[in-house]
Amino acid sequence: MYRKVLRDNINIKKNKGLYRYYFENSRPVGCFPKASYDTYGEAIVWCSNDYLNMSHNNKVIDASINGCKKYGVGSGGTRNISGNTSSVMNVERAISKFHGKSDALIFNSGYSANSGSLCSLGKAFNDSIFFSDKDNHASLIDGIRRSGREKKIFNHNDICHLESLLKEQPLERKKIIVFESIYSMDGSTAPIPRIVDLAKRYNAFTYVDEIHAVGLYGKGGRGLCNMYNCEKDVDVIQAGFGKAFGTSGGYIASDKEVIDSIRLCAEPFIFTTSTSPVIAEATLESIKQIESFDEQRRKMKFNVRYMKSALIKNGFTVMNDEETHIIPVFVGDPFLCRQISNDLLNNFKHYVQPINFPTVPKWSERLRITPTYKHSRSMIDKLVLEMIQVFKNNNVKLN
Ligand SMILES: Cc1ncc(COP(=O)(O)O)c(C=O)c1O
Image (cartoon, rainbow, N blue to C red; front, side, top):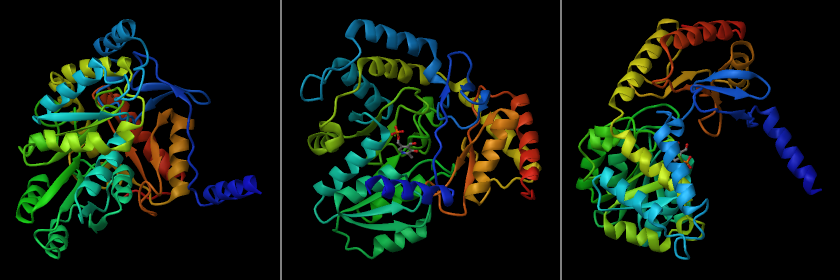
C-alpha cells in the first residue's frame, strides 16, 4: 500500500512534466566549462553556478589538500562539541571583514543559512511580520514559514506594493523585509537602495540573500549591497560558498548582537556537524583569491553581453533586460522545456538546465543560461546556432 501511494505520486509528477531528472556527470579539473555525462559523453555546461570556476582553482585545491593533511577530513562534531575549529572560525572572520560587518556565522549550506536565520529572527522578534518578495528562493520561504510569523508577499521588485503593505502596519510593529539581490531564476536585481530607504522610513529590519551576486559584483566581488554602497544599511547579508566561491556552505554577516542571537537558536546551525576543515581551508583561500579576479569578472560580463545580444538578435525571448550573468530564455511549457534541453544535450552536447515548476511559476518554464569567463565566443556562437535549430525542430516560433 505504501509503495503504491509513492508510485502513484511519482507517476503524477511524470505525467505533468514535473519529474526531476538528475544527470550523473563528472567534472575533471582543467576541463571547465565541459563535463562528462555518463550517457551522453562530454558536453559544454551552460548552467553551472561555479561562476568563476573556483572549484578547480589550483590554490584553492592546494589549500584543501593542505587543510586535509594538517587537520584531517572531518571537523569532529557540532560547533558546541568539538567542531568549533580554527579553520571554521577563520572563515567567519574573513567573511565578516569581506562584507564590512562585525561578525558572521557559517552554515553547511546556503539553504540552512536562510532557513535557520529567518526562523530564529522571526521567533526572536515578538509579533513580527515578514515582507517577502514573490520570487524569493525556497530556503527563504522555508525559514519564514518555520518561524510561524505572519507573512505578506510583495510583487517581485515592486517598491510601491512593498510600501503599501508596510504602511498598513503600525510603525512600532517589528517588520522584516526579505529579498534577494540577484534572483536566481531570472537574473533580475533588487532595487536595494530603495528597499533600504523604505526600511528606514517604516522602521523595518532587512535581510538580503546575495548568494548569486557575491564574487561577481561590487568591489572585489563583495556583492550588490557593496556596489550600491548599502552594506552598512542592510541588517543581514546572507550568501554562500557553493556558487562563485566554488566550495560549499552558507553564511550570514551582520553585527554581533544579530549573529549571537542566531548562533544561540538556529537549529540548522546548532544540531549538525560543522564544516569540514578541507572545505573551510579551501573556502578561506577562495575568499582571498576572489578579490583579485577583476579580469575574470570583466570577461564574464563581456560574454553575458555578447550572448544576450546574440539570443535577442535571433528571436529568443530573454526574460529580463538586465546585464546580470543569469540569462533566462522563455519556453513556457514543461514538456517542451525538457525536450529542448534533452535535444541540446543529445544532438549537440550542450547541457542547459530546464527550469520547471515549482522552481518557477507554471507556464513560465525556461532555460537558464549562465555564461562564465571560460566560455569562448565560438562556444557561444555555436550554442545560439544550435538552439535556433532545436527550437525550430520543436516548432517553437522565434520572434
Ligand atoms: C537564492 C538562493 N538562496 C539560497 C540557495 C541555497 O544555497 P545552497 O545551494 O548553498 O544550499 C540557493 C541555491 O541555489 C539560491 O539560489
